[in-house]
Image 1: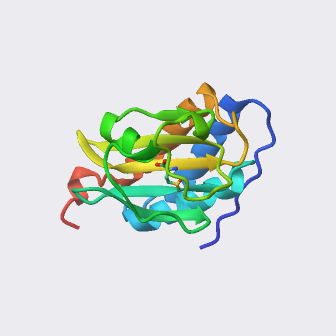
Image 2: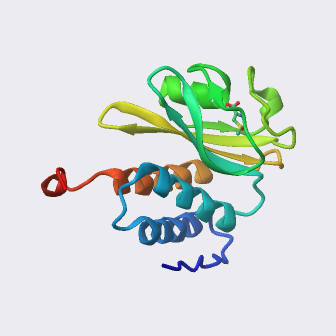
Length: 170
Ligand code: SME
């Protein structure tokens, strides 16, 4: 299988994320494996989204967050719920939009270059699956439109994981 990442040439963030969501749907279509989809999803966003230095997943193992598929420099492996931006998103189940990481009390600096960050909690049927984290070396890189866009593409990721009921045992 080969998948061509289409470059998205637009300044309009709503259009950008709608197109990115469409590409993610195509990329994940028909596959339900969490690690496979997470790896491809991170690679897609890494190549499509300008001015970022890390993007990837932390999955909840029942106790804490453990790093999953990502793109960028090697990252901290485990993050306790409530700690850092990721742990806060997981504990509150609310997207964290951090305009300047230096202003976020308890921010965990995996890559010293990161200046802004957005973290979306991933919840399926009320259960915490983990978080999706994107970092940028530019302060103020992400705004509310990025938050909405990230939540949109994360929905595509979550929907791809759910197997239709009639193939549950397949
Ligand atoms: N900055 C995050 C840690 C994860 S790395 O950015 C990859 C945090 O404060 O939770």
